[in-house]
Image (cartoon, rainbow, N blue to C red):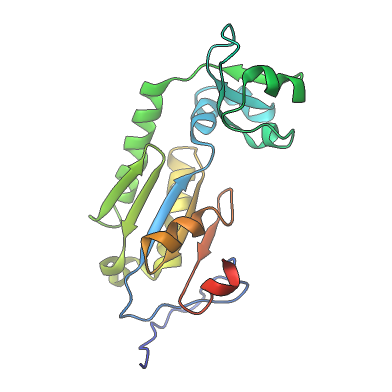
Length: 199
């Protein structure tokens, strides 16, 4: 089968270490995954949380309370999502904990998905912080898949204050795997040519 490659100038390098272009016959699917979403929203609401190890946690009075999300500084201490607050504090004495604010998370999710809607009308929310986007028909207006992914990351970071990692591929499975590959705030392209190398 011969590919009719889209010509795009200045296409950046991605996680594969080389420039990637898509055959025009392929679908282009993005998986957009907000990085440490609950913790990121809390840092937007209270900027003092950005420079300290912080976690969004359940009730500390309840010894079964768990870590729901943590920022990058907390991750450096080995704090894991779903571990007990008690265990997390053993790893980091200076850990700052905040209770969850689910109504705020829902509103941020709505605003982020509204940005996705600018690039395609085929947006499929997968969870409060993840969405699949089919941008196959959007390339004429906005450029190839990686270009759209980078534009989305820039818009969400600039307008909402949250970073998003995006996987770009020809199906949902590889797009979702790609969004986990280069966190935080990264774009990863998985094609028919490089998926064995990356996965």
